[in-house]
Image 1 (cartoon, rainbow over the protein chains, first blue to last red):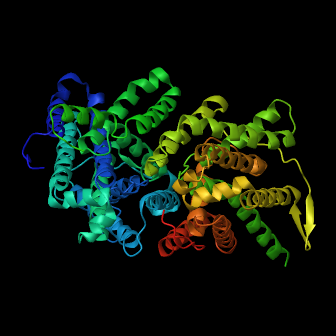
Image 2: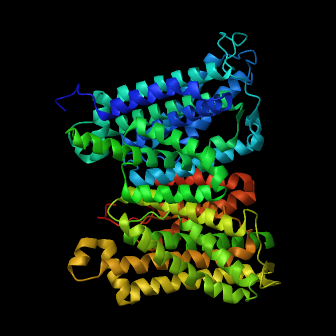
Image 3: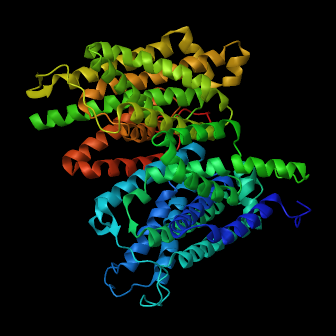
Length: 333
Length: 287
């Protein structure tokens, strides 16, 4: 786009969301703040899926695998369960590993699946679904990871170099820490999407064969994008367990993978912020609607999901942004 | 010897059940290019239809006949309400049917509760097979599966409907140009695939416990079987199911049932990766 510096509606929405989130503690009690801080982790997970799916066309049905690996990595470190180095308890190290291990795993999986006669579209989706089922099985059957119960009593983030420092536990502090890290993650993904790399990913999404003929090594691009998405999902998982205090097989498997897919589809797959807000909105609405609607809530969510897919493939937030963009004469495709 | 016979029979049993599920998936996938993630829930629906018939005082056999009919009708409704809106959006069929699976699961949970139910085995007793005692009902399921597969093959290779359907699989636009009503064919195909799932669910309901989450356990292996076998021919799912069923049972017997599923899934991913068009590939078709 030649008018590259025009402020898009997406930028405006991102800024607006940030302002609202910064102001939110003014009108929320401690419990609500704790909940919102967890939603930031879910939002980041949703954005990571929007990155690989919306921007690169990789419909991953097992995105929670990376979230779960990140969560377990963080728990293992902060609980002092690293084999041979039980005195290493650093939250910082946990954070690094929670990004690095899922990214590495995504990279290996990408290398295996994308090169040569690579897997495309639905085949990739079904294989990732199988990977999610395998991961959940492994987590349940591996005593080191606590089996079905998972790893309990994961400590909150600790600012000390190797634990022992200031614990981020107080709700307001935790809220802003999580908001800060989530915002950094979103910033990174946003910068990637706008870079030349991001444009190449979109070209691959729209027509992979054409991108190949234009000289792009599409397998390498997809593998890199998948690894980045995996790393960010892992970061989200680490954020989640430090608040939730508990890493269980639920975090790694099919159920959460399905949920995050719904958040992203309902919010908007093509816009990172729409996916983030989709997760935040669905989780918040769930908070009070599941009381009012009881068991009918999941039914309603399923119907909403189907209707969104049928009528608004851009997602509810994505569709609104798209309409505003159109009115403003910014063609965002 | 006896143990060997039982292992072989168990493997065949699992394989034949898988064929029943996978064939329905493959017909819908191959013909309509729709990935039906709700297939596992259609199967569950079949089992619950049978349960309902029994609770109302009907016999098992009545339920077994009612299940495919009811689930087939549900398939018609689903096709009309959801599937036909996403025909041209291939990946969105995954999402729409995934949403459907959620809704069906939740509806069943609301109506029957989350707890598991069980259905009585109608054919108690065992039959002697090559010196080994084997449950009669399992043999019955195997027979049902073989008959269903044979009927399907006959339908696709011996009737005008089948000819039209294979024409659509080979080239949908060309078939439409030649005057085949693809819209109507799609509707019947989806209903047929759904009925297959319903039959599978009802037939195996006495062997398993029925709960709203049971669908996924069949969906993933069946999908892997379809991908392993390949979409090019109707024999693909049969071969794929054989690969999955045999691997599953061998691992369970030789090592442990806990790891069987893991081994199967990993094996399947590797095979799908090495042969993306399936073990039975047909040349000249890009999906």
